[in-house]
Image (cartoon, rainbow, N blue to C red):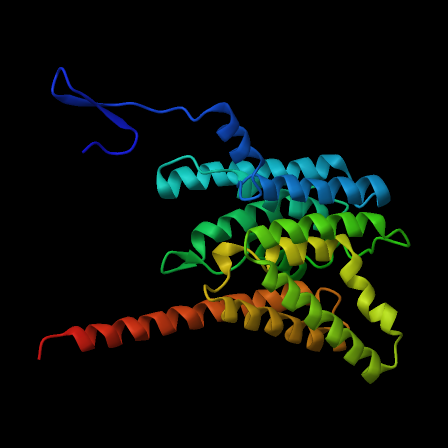
Length: 296
């Protein structure tokens, strides 16, 4: 029996590989599918365009292009060095454009350095073949901690115009739902709103002011890309929901201490800890299964 993609030459008694080209409709269907790996880069580009054209969220196009370019170059170089192959660049593009949107600095070097740190963390900070931090989350936290006098992060809201936020949320929700990760975003958003109301009660500040941050472009990237990153989230659906709630809980505590970068730091602490716990449980179960199957 011949394998898929191969046809048997009856006359010569040998097989030859034949690459079957899918019909044109199938190609278009694959390209337009929401499961296509290029949909997230297209979506993050929509966030950039909507935010910049409406409110000018970018400091400059040059800085954003620099961040994207360094991220792509670092991905190409490190992918070739560590894996001996050219990597897919969709992840690097998302990282670069996230850095370009979220970093604020009068200098150019923080954009380049943040992208380089973000991509490098994927290849260097690994445990059992997995990187522990979302790349852009790690890079931004590193820059805010190490170069806080020079670097800040975007924290503006969408202003009084709700249509950019509604469009982004509608598109993002559909994409994340199709990718079967909507529950992560939903749990985090519900938890954030609940904790915002609790903060309002405890501090006496207007509830609108406590909820307002989630309407900003920073949170669009955070809830649709950072906390849903498949490579840095635990496997089980229940575990993902618990981690999303834990991130919102830690963020609540940090916000009580007036930390404006609370979501970044909360994910930085909770995400890797959850992955390490999952790895520890996997190792314990593997040892237990090996002990059970060992001959007596």
